[in-house]
Length: 169
Image 1 (cartoon, rainbow, N blue to C red):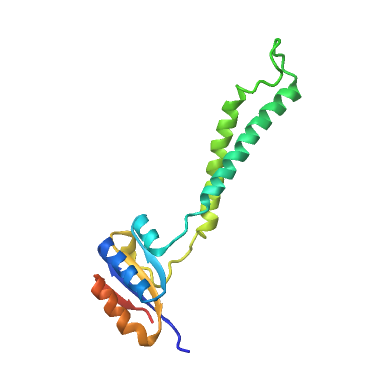
Image 2: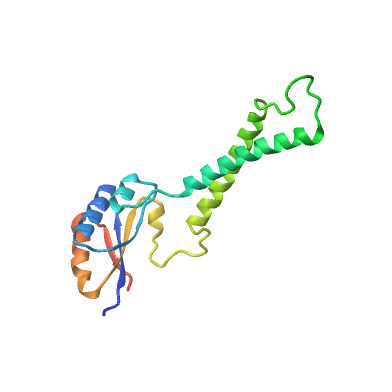
């Protein structure tokens, strides 16, 4: 069994990158990573990436915040025996403000925590294949391929519009 070696291709245009992804997928070639200077839904659709579960962290934070806001307000009213002049001892409507504020607070904290956890941040050093042009204005594809496939894959990437195809092996 031959060992795989990494290849990186740089693209100037999104259309060229998407064409390369499509060509590689049609040939059954596995794509390692795709780098982009900004978020592109087209890349996620082409790669078949699932939606991020961070939204569930945010929802959980919101629900916990609402429960905490109401719970803290009700506990405070019951603990301190506020005089309410014939009104119910635990009025629900004014406590909506506290519940909303806690909802926002907990949602933000759990969203940030979920994002950091699932993106495996912080990264203390960049991968060897990373090119700083990926953060400026270029797109990139990382492939791990066999020695005998390198020429064919390099030709496919060049035909799709790759500016550079670098062998990192």
